[in-house]
Structure formats: C-alpha cells, structure tokens
Image (cartoon, rainbow, N blue to C red):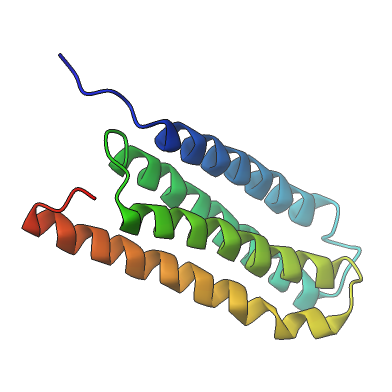
Length: 135
C-alpha cells in the first residue's frame, strides 16, 4: 500500500506548472513581440526574467515531487521562497521592460535573495534526510 499524497505537494505542483507556463509564454512574447519593440538591453532583461522564471518553476515541480508524501518545514520554506522570488525577480524585470519605473530595479535583488533562500532551504531539507528528519 502506498503512502497518502501530501495535499501541499499538489498545490505546489500546480503553482510550479502555472509559473512555468507563464514563463514559456513570456519567453515567446519577448522573442516575437518585443524583439523589435524594445532596445536590445531591455530584451536581454526580459530574457533573464523568463529564464529565471522557467528554471525556478521547474524547481518548484521538483519540490512538489520531494514532498509527495511528507512536506518538511524546509520544503515549505523552499516552496514559498521560490514563489515569492519568481514573482518579485521576474515581475519587477518584466515591469521595467514594459515601461514601469526603473526604480523597480532596486527591488529586483530581493527576489534574487528569495530564490537563493529557496536553494538554501532545499539544502537544509537534504541535510535533514541524511539524519532521518521528516518534519
């Protein structure tokens, strides 16, 4: 008999999938609609945002898989940090390219710090696995 599936894993999977879908759409939008509409530097900013969004959306799917039967505190922190990081990091960069105030660039590093916190929380989860931690 298999263990029951953790409900949070399903929610994290859905969020990761939706953010991945939006990331692919953003990449396509940048490649086609923005290619000739914005300066090259802004197009690179857009690509960076789409790339980081897609990468971390895939990581969220991995977090969901890791937490399929038990979502540790570290996995919860990782999931939250990745979602917040994607929204802030990619969101501020996208807003800047689409004409938002450049001062948003001062907020972008907060998103990057959240993404790094997500990776750190994953490392903590991994260390806990070696000790048999399941909480």
